[in-house]
Length: 221
Length: 213
Image (tube, each protein chain N blue to C red):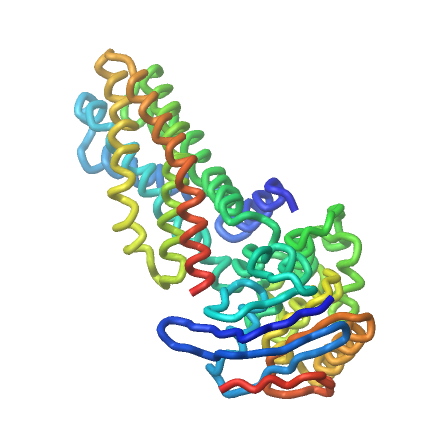
């Protein structure tokens, strides 16, 4: 079995059970749309707070789908089979992260232009937002995998998972929202995007091993 | 294939479940594990599979110490735990296809009659457990016994010399138990090894009893 077939399996399961990426997008759109409804049609204010709101909504949408990353397989014993297969645990984590990103991060990026419109964001700002999410959401999935692996044996561990992960998500939030603000103010987003890229590469290097260690610890305890 | 345990001990949490377990299992042999609930039978099987590591002692596969190379042991064993890793959203055949792929079988995916995925060998394996008619049915509709049969179909679909069976007869009916006993007998005739934990011996004829607790 290859990396590809494991990802396809996760995607088929996600599609048959949870409607694939539709849930994450639905949550993102609804959560982001609450702010304009609550604040009222103040275009200048909305434009000013849009970067933060959109990034927080994306972050929450990603977080809410994380607790099932390994738990579904742990509950029915599939995790034992995965650990007994010739896959290395960190490669296994990478397949899970990739499927998670395909079913949450990617749909969010595709939905972004539509949400950006409700916040009166211009074309250039919207492009920066999409680019920052393209760099930021994979990092969210990678860091999230560590949290999901650590809480794999905890039933109803969603709250614990949020407590663990939200502090770790702060850098991505700061530089993600920062890049959009920088574009709004005409400074240019390059510096923020480079830091986002660094965060992505750093988490790509560390998180698969950390999550694999947490999974091994769980299986062997 | 020859499997030998010397002075094996298992600690879980702060509790020692067993210690000083010795055994030798050679081609065609079968170990039957019995003992009270919580006495360490499942842990012993997980230890054989490398899912737990022994606190003491060592395991030898064909006279090589396994601690240096769990992967070569794991590529030769089939572990059936007390859970059925059946995905409700997959059809019975699709679950089997996934397990075969995980076990490293080179798989050519095909479309079954019901539209789901099948591959060479899925039909035969399901037929061996007399559930061929359920191949295209979503697994969420299967009963506990049918799920167990589906899980046991791995024994046929994935040829491995060492079988580790944890309460394999749970939720099987009488005919299911007979099928399983026949599978085990056939496996041993062809030189396979079996380690099984169970509360009932449903007509199997073990070569060694290990009592826990």
